[in-house]
Length: 414
Image (tube, rainbow, N blue to C red; front, side, top):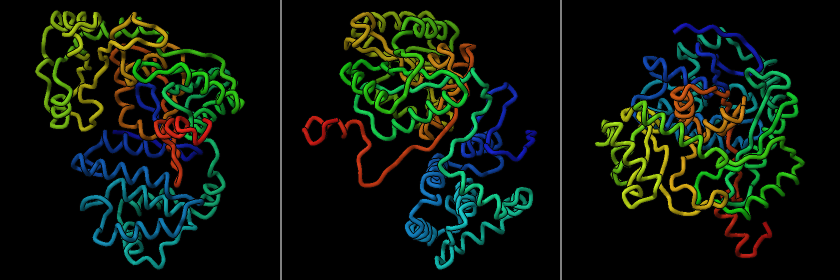
């Protein structure tokens, strides 16, 4: 794999097909996955999960504004019995945490025996030494990095007047400060590039949608002085999603599965293919029609993507695209008995509505592959995906479900 690099203000990689992966962690994960022989992304599913934890930790917990004592104490305790953070060899976890500590020079490892031992040991690893020789983190770069904390990064492929972002909350609860961060971030790029901002309600699940929350959310958006250019609902394109789903059934890239939910979950965990995976197109369409009618037989089924049941990425193990539900939808009523999953509808509507840059928190990272697979399979335009860290606060509540409880109990007004 041939890669050329240049120092700049943001970290991104442009692939041969023209798509761009942005963000240091996203780029690192991608490179480690396409070059598994480097051995930096773990050997087992458990090691990969542990590495993901440390990647997130390096971004959300280590900064110039963090509680230095808590960070040092936590790392020193974790490293007591360990040479490496994960497994028995250098991994992306070590690289990410080491880099975060090194960049923020205010975080000294002195006085923490285990942390200091680990830090010095990682510094002597050949991979690390060679990287630092090529890209030295001198004092000036460190000061610049510290000064940039809290600032916005550059959007890859952004052109003045052509950027389209979107804020797609689900109307199933009250917005919290994390939603405000997402909305304001999308508005920032709308204004910076004189582009457009889409205010879209994600209403793919009739069980959760509540029109009362839509009004509350719109009031909150107005209070934040955010002025979207376009208002839409994911449900505006239900007919189009069905067309795409039927094309995939016809092409053999999707199949109808009547496996019980619990059995399906176990099969995915064990990386086993479904018994329905190789059934005929005719049988798939027969069951699909049952789903569309909402019959008892249809309620036993779901539509799944035919990707790879053995994938290391759990999100790519034949994910569900459609499910059958009889609940009336707040906007479409009883017209439909089938509803797309968020992970199927999201890339489709982003492409249909002309979104150029979809900003998502790092918790969606593993689902990014599915996002691009859907668009590639259907031959649709691919927006840029950019990851940003999820906002976590201590000693407060950020769950929509819990916030709703506080409002319903009359403790706060909402």
